[in-house]
Length: 281
Image (cartoon, rainbow, N blue to C red; front, side):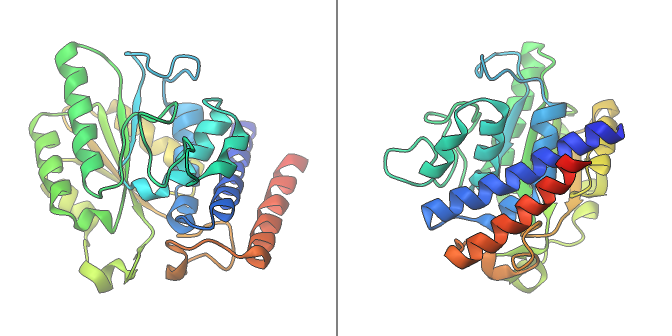
């Protein structure tokens, strides 16, 4: 992509990170680590890749997105707000009683959310069903989903993977956020899913491995996925959990914890510095 387009998208990714921290801090709970790691992926999907319209969020011809690792809802909510699905100020209501922005995405409450998720392993199954529905109805929409690397320890993920390959769902793309950490430690320590790429290949998927925090690599992978026919694509995205906040990076304790005031100020300061640098370029 051009340098100017990459700058614009990177700026948006940092704004997504800012919204994640603001929302989780306001809620005093949430999941910042795995939300921060997918900022580039979800930014690229919503601002470059996907055919969507905030003015018509239920357009039957739209592309679909399923956040299979639903606990990282702060990333999705911030992206939807920046894309114009609802006012940015609503992020401060995260997880509060009566808010449209609950701890996990709800398709019944939040504009732009295509599927309610949270029970790990189920999102990719729904995404496969959506992709099959598109094939049956002769629609050309595409379906995207993001899974956690800890999430793929769930058996249902592999049932869905087997089914998607059997049905040749080449309109389905699954990102695996491979930040190597889950709630209790590294994925190897808990229940190793490695080698992730070889497992998806064995299940009949087209597999691409990238740096998921690099927008050029995200773009190239999605172009390749769009051009690949006859099988779904799995993009194994190696990322840094807590990316963008120095003390959260690669720190398992920030899987599901909110920053205190002094920690919040440090995080926002670092993110604002990155935003200011990009805006000055």
